[in-house]
Length: 138
Picture 1 (cartoon, rainbow, N blue to C red):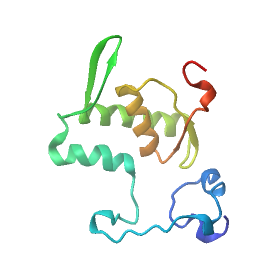
Picture 2: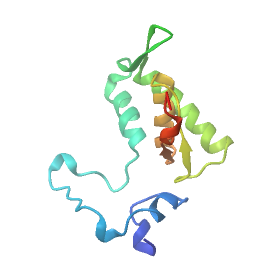
Picture 3: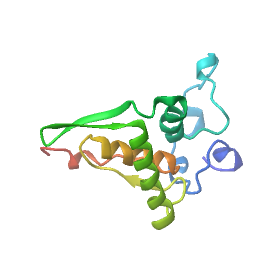
């Protein structure tokens, strides 16, 4: 997949992910005919998931929660947004990552992992899954 059409719908500067997609003729048909499936031309999922919730007045609501060391730990949308923004700032401004760069996240599911995942989205980065050999018990 190459040429100007290949990257028409991305802001990624690092095109590794797009370069390794299957050939376009093997893609499914993407049809967004229902009104709820029509998205703006430019969409940042991190902003849609966090900023929009806070802007809609839900900042004090619980966004995520997990058991950490046997105790329940929760984060509100505002807390998650603040943490994700701090992490995204470090990824971009201190580590020099650019949209499309790959980031490996490996952690138990907890509010900090959610903040890291959302920071990667907000920064336009690509989250990579660890290989199965890193899975517990392997």
